[in-house]
Length: 407
Image 1: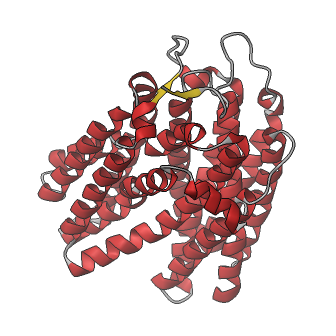
Image 2: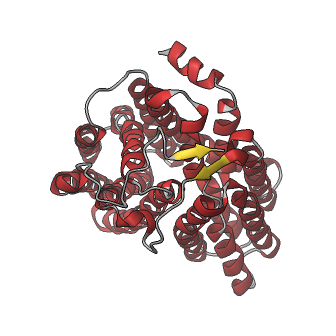
């Protein structure tokens, strides 16, 4: 297992691209926390902090596919000015704080809209960096697992920076790291050389592929499951010893995803990924359901680890399906739609789980997560005919082997 991953990371530019992308995405992983911490440090209410976080999330949901389309048309150099504009928006918010409100809203909105699509850009690059489909599929799993580490470590970094310096300094440091990560990626030779193939003019872009729409529908409910778990963990902690308990649960989920992703990417899979995706979605749904039992802290932490085991594998398999179904010349935008769809699902999940926790406690909130997992599986089962790869003329799949070319 270790030898296979070392072979991937020995590929020229692989470590630079993976590390740069993870660092560049720190603002995405920590923006909500940064906004809440800064707003509260300036005396703002939790309600205002939540609204500002939602504005940032809305901006990201709108901006990711639009910037992804720009990358497909003009190259990955687009991402650096986008990163600078995003950092400028966060700096504006850091300088103003929650008052005056119009400035605060403008700052977080700009920061969200111009967050560069580094995630989609990296996945578009892998076919030109690695050798063969097997290595590309394995690095998708490593990418998904590493993402869980970033989402676990990012909030810890924000907390540390805020404690040592200030909430404002924490936000500015995270914004600067975002720019540094984007700069690391876009100045790498594979990024500078990468060009998408010419695309068929169509305002729908990758969304005209029915298989991709089916996948995104499923991932919307995965987003609901994930973020409702975060809300439910806080509700559980309120009854079982305080805030550190919620950290145990969320860290357990991330650890489970890390283990699952590494194990999944270590073997070569046969058969079509669309069929395998349904099996992974079934595993994800089944592993989320026991969370509603809400046992003691030790057992609950173990269930949290279990709930994460199929997360990174399902995401990695989803990336392969995107490669196979995205129309020619739309691969970055297609991957960016995953970020948008899961982000919208996360927002819905937080709202629904919050209401469930208010009236039914942690058990009801964790039930939302289980329902999200079942719904994600249900979408894949109901839309199976659309995931059969029979593209009509003009809808040739982009595929990891030949559709993203380095010139």
